[in-house]
Image (cartoon, rainbow, N blue to C red; front, side, top):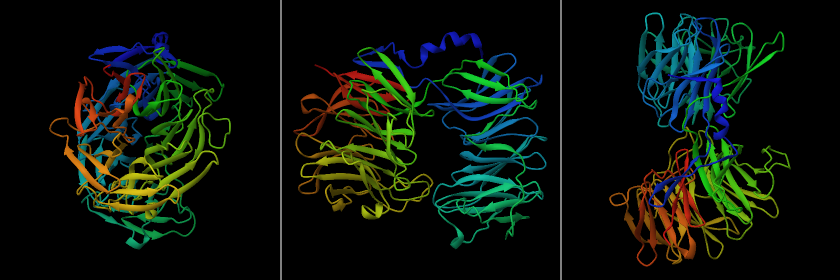
Length: 634
């Protein structure tokens, strides 16, 4: 536990935007330029009281490691305390609950945990079947129930006798399930609403642990079902959340059609990772908890008086999703959790940071503009680095970055943004919306501000494009992934390469070029006119677009290990004089065009997680939350 006095407020401005980076020399040409976004993300926040009836704020904090601690802010004392998690890091909450007995629960990383604000301590922690709760609830006896991703696991915890029961997985599907709601009726039957490939409502007998689906197969739709406990003791459910008018009455393990409106929901302080319960027991309200500015604000609704609290907390910063060299001679990109934009100026060793619309999965430069493909919604943004920053809003013409368009559900999670060398065309590719299989391509024409959106049926059915490269003659070479959208179902068996005509937007050729490949992570047009690529991280290959054949292939696993990887992979880096470099997770190499052999430039002292771009003699890359670079030999 670490106690942080509000006097720490004097120190934290040195860490946030704009600010100097104080680059650290790591030796052998490597440098650490610091943390791109030195902030954490709340993953469930509640206002409550401690043992002295002091109003306190509890919030699960997440950084690039996952959720790493619980933050407690004592409103009266003006102090913050940090409580490290009592189990291994690497996952984060997707649901939490403040119980009627004033205990704060979450369940993730295969551990169910209880925090008691009265004791100011973790008072229960128990390992369970993997992985994390997507919903939590409390029944009439005070038992806490958890429904977990990805296999519909169920866990209950009785705070009276301190017994945890792990029911294991109660429903089987061949895709990862999101049980986003759970409820218990007044007879003790448990109901779970899940999605996304196909919605379903489960009824589970708490005594036996046997669960039965209540929806027939023809009634299941793409999306999620939901359930909630009502004040009348019954549970009400929707087979599909998008069908607002259709409700079921769920009771004693059975489902029946409902005539009329469902009863009001029973108040339970539980929700997803966005939980923000703002009411203290004395009626005061938590108006704001800002982890970026490190400020909390509490208001008394009766007097309208507001109290601002300044606090400090530890953390390792947010994950860098993508980065590239911008037209103004800086390195720019985005982070996630929180979703922020960053710009690093190597000449001044200085950072600038701003709020970002969406998660900047993939970024690229074209001319004097910088573009981003964003999750969720498959958005496309255009930023002018030579004009002032104006926070992005859909439909706001003066925004900079400007919001151009979005492409969900055809594309929801972008993996590649190709800035075509014609200077006018942008092509966005990625996996589709939640529960869908097969992503498309978005073509954006800058001069006319028009778009063409192709679906997977018009490309490679049941697959998504992961990598793209422009070829001479107006063609594109694409590499696919068989991965579905989040919560979707795998349907294709092997990834493919394909050729597409840019003018007609039609597939010219496609083939399983390398048997057994799931993903073509990155493609690069080499100086020899052939395409160099990486499949499944460790298979380097050379493709001849003229003969449509693989002319060279080797595994890098033994000598080099896997290539770097991110949601927007940038494994290949183009340098001066036509040279091409490869970012492995533990090394940087140059490719020799004559025989496609790798020449080691340096072994990296840090793991290269996300590539990568060249600027002024250095290759820039990311390691979790840190921006690093390597100076190329003269």
